[in-house]
Length: 225
Image (cartoon, rainbow, N blue to C red):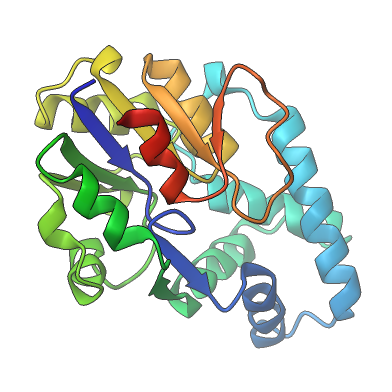
């Protein structure tokens, strides 16, 4: 293997506050008067529905967060309003703050110089990806960083994976892709012939025995070194 490519949110950097808390704030901002416990329950339902019905062989150029928010509105018993779903998607992204996971820099220190390192991220924030990486002292580790906002395609679309492979002069068989989303990261990488490493963190243990799973980035070193 010659390259290791990373996701950002919940992989290299922790999203704060927790996504569920962001949704509670965003729904309040949009005057959606639904009890908090109901919103949280419907977030879980929408996630399950997306996992069940998502078909990577039929992926278009739709935003996965937008599709999720359409499903969330439906799960909450609200009309599937595209304008509202887009507004929720934007508000959610702009409410995100980041902090570095404790192990991130140590892991990148171990990999730097041994592998070509890259980043691809589904990035809906008004802030620029490189600016956020620089703020947290991470940008200098990477040979290439790609945001969906700049490229016009979001994971798991194959074009965002093929673009970074070309930029890093890698064949799919020469790269690992490390991320926390099963649909965006694991399925997207597998579809391209890249070896995914699924970062489960606080989620339940990965049930797919054919996928390399780790609980944090420190365990990535046991796989790639």
